[in-house]
Image 1 (cartoon, one colour):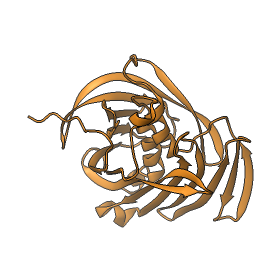
Image 2 (cartoon, rainbow, N blue to C red):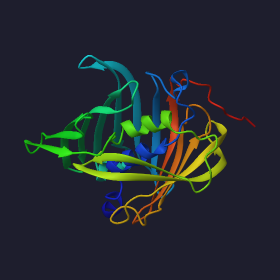
Image 3 (cartoon, rainbow, N blue to C red):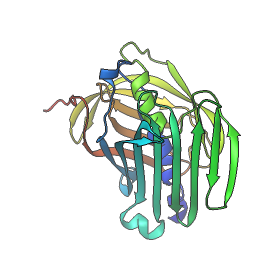
Image 4 (cartoon, helix red, strand yellow):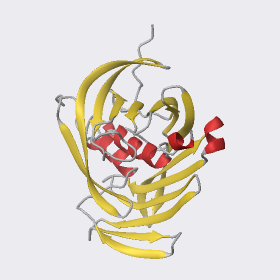
Length: 268
């Protein structure tokens, strides 16, 4: 059982959520997909039946070094019987520019079954540099980044506001420069089509995506994830299904508030 639970970590849960909203309705400022006060809560289940944990994302508006920013706080934890075997308490934070969407600061503080990390990253977008402070090991480093690099949380929101989906075609891919765990990588997401999804809130028209992930210890193969987001101006993350090396992982939206636009739901 413990071997199965080791596959479930909030690191990968939040990586998944970073991919969830890789689409948006418009670049116009009055048509942005979110505001401060937006909140999502997800139920995470293992192999379709065992509740393994929950994750939340909350958006706040503030200032950082005199600049208006969105401050997003992401939290993840194991719950119920799973927590008896494998305790997870994860915290992710991102501060990104309110207008450009580029991140200035990223925090990752996790405890996953005794495996801990405490990392703070400051991004210098002008010099394309990440200043990484590994607080656990008391090591600081300076790492070159790609242009307009995103962290795993800021990407979630940046892509909501900067990609048009009205004319997106099946098979089309979106790519983005990302920085995580002291390294650069290219994130790619493939559009699979539109689908009506039956949720706890009602039937919702969705956009279906497949991110290309790294196959190996956690995911079975490069195309192991399937994602559904609402096909409206909010681009609400609704569901993810992931095939793991052992078993499967599923995340479903269970609670939300503070949406900027009407949430388009069909009721029976």
